[in-house]
Image (cartoon, rainbow, N blue to C red; front, side, top):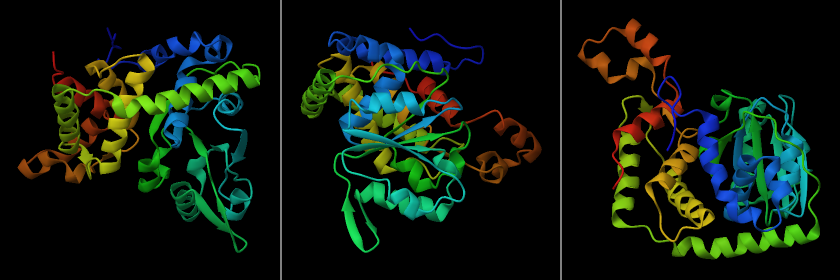
Length: 311
């Protein structure tokens, strides 16, 4: 059962505990010390490795070294790129390699024009530097941004990430993984990738997922709705989490976890002047005060509490 905080919304720690439950099988694979470093962070990076997609982590803590240690189980090498307002595309591109987990520290501070070029390289997995094209095979990017700085990312960048993860506690830096552990994780990723398309999603669960998307798209505080890419990622994450839990079918609790990981980063809140109550004589001052109490995570929780899961 999910316990709730005083405002009725599960805390980030409580939400992450749900995600940590996916690592029971990995602990049986002699990866206990790696997992115990931080099971929530480990699971987030593992999901990015399974999907070969990029990940966004929101935190104010120094976690780059821990992510680098975990990432060495997924890719052959890891590199940390410290972003700043003066960073250029050339300085970033010179550090990108295939079969590499690249950590973009403070990605949100990059100028919009540099963000656009970086995003193009991440989407195409190919970039041009000094007249030569470079391919990025088996490449994963992990963006680390400070809390509440996500609006500085372009809308297309926010929609690019497979999932978002908030890290509230400083993870323990575990020892460097051995070759045997790397082989075990790579074999686990391969078997998991094969099982994901075969995951059974019942009609009732599929309708529940679609209802959540519809309610998010039509929520009074959501601007521009939910992108088709977000819906696809939602479906993938539901299946992937079910496999990691060791299930043969999808349950409503898995859908809830996936919704909390996929949608908050992608939602845009409307301006107070676009709120529907304005059209019916609502007081703009009262609405402005009321909207200050909302954020993207609260919107997702509001929808989850409004849509009844199948029994």
